[in-house]
Picture 1 (cartoon, one colour):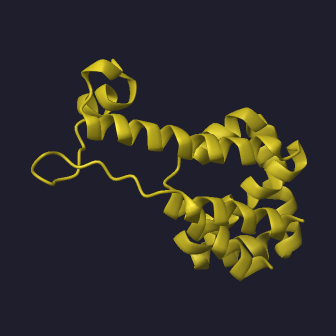
Picture 2 (cartoon, helix red, strand yellow):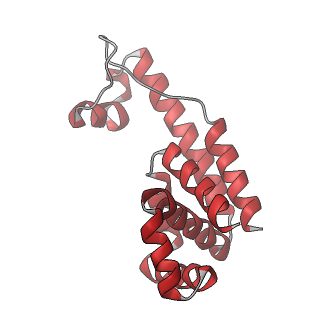
Length: 150
């Protein structure tokens, strides 16, 4: 079931429309005030491109939220655990291998990490954290979990 949920979430993330908003000179918008204005400002003051960007972003977020919210608590925590351990796999393979040895094996590390996550935040908070990550990071981390642990 976990692998199925991972693969479904990866499919959702990969199928979302790309949504890169550029400034008139073609550069990426990075000014915090400008980003805030686009996402949270008065829609009547947005350009046509900015409105389209906001609509695509909202639709993309809704698709992610619907999938994650429909998971049971246990299914969500397992998915988040896979993301967390997969991220560790890509960020520091040596450190992850050391943790696996220190915990006495993969299964013990997975269980201990899962308990830490369950005690750290609610499903709703976890959903906010996961959807707040860059989609490519989530995809790569989940693929890393599949590669290393499945």
